[in-house]
Image 1 (cartoon, rainbow, N blue to C red):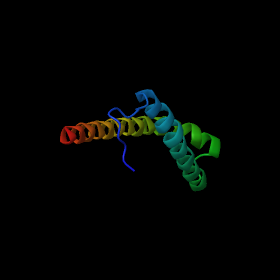
Image 2 (image 1 turned 90 degrees about the vertical axis):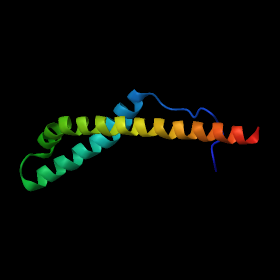
Image 3 (image 1 turned 90 degrees about the horizontal axis):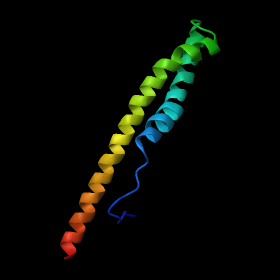
Length: 90
């Protein structure tokens, strides 16, 4: 099913960076990295989570910013397609 609106709703940038990036992706990576460090004997699980958090949050922020940019790109393409379809009808 295609979307036939000129302006699809885009969430704000902070949502993509903080929620999708840092919370969902960053925390998941942090826990996985901590588990790897725990099972390799480098850190205990809690120390591993604390050590992995800064790296995971930075990576999550970069991921979230990329998600926001991709969403804006898709919205731009949808708007161009909508305008093109309207031009063909007139």
